[in-house]
Amino acid sequence: MVHRWATGMVVDESRTCREAADEPALDGEALFERFTEGHRLLVEALRAAPAALECWTVFPARSSLAFWARRQAHETRIHRVDAESARGGARTPVAPAHAEDGIDELLAGFHARDRSRVRTDSPRTLRIRAVDTDAVWTVRLSTRHR
Image 1 (cartoon, one colour):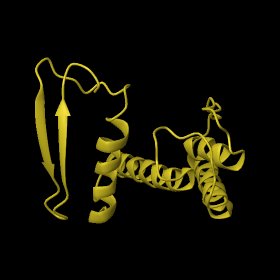
Image 2 (cartoon, helix red, strand yellow; image 1 turned 90 degrees about the horizontal axis):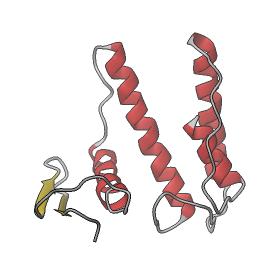
Image 3 (tube, rainbow, N blue to C red; image 1 turned 120 degrees about the vertical axis):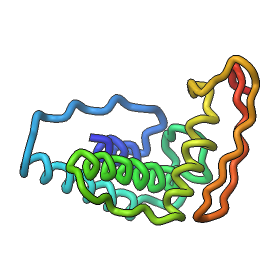
Image 4 (cartoon, rainbow, N blue to C red; image 1 turned 90 degrees about the vertical axis):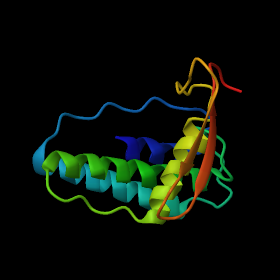
């Protein structure tokens, strides 16, 4: 569903957020085929989009095209980990650079928004370091957004 929603934002160059469509009740091979098709359509739309694409994004980014490519790469990875975890057994490793970028998106993108619910009664500073890439983030938490 999310791939198709993002594809619509890119293809239509929508300037406002749209509601995502309901997904049909599918399971097994039909669900897999729908996912595969939705992913293919997303990749095709991102490849065909103009470099100067302007459309709605969840938070500011250097370009709308870069935002949607990044956001959907992380969205897909997160759900792959979910599915592999539910299945049991080994999970596909996440490349350190991709994991680092996902942490950056979470902290600098999602948690930097007014809507973030990450708050604390007394101000705190978190220092986060990715030991496999040496990336470092400093996050300041408070009772309200600054």
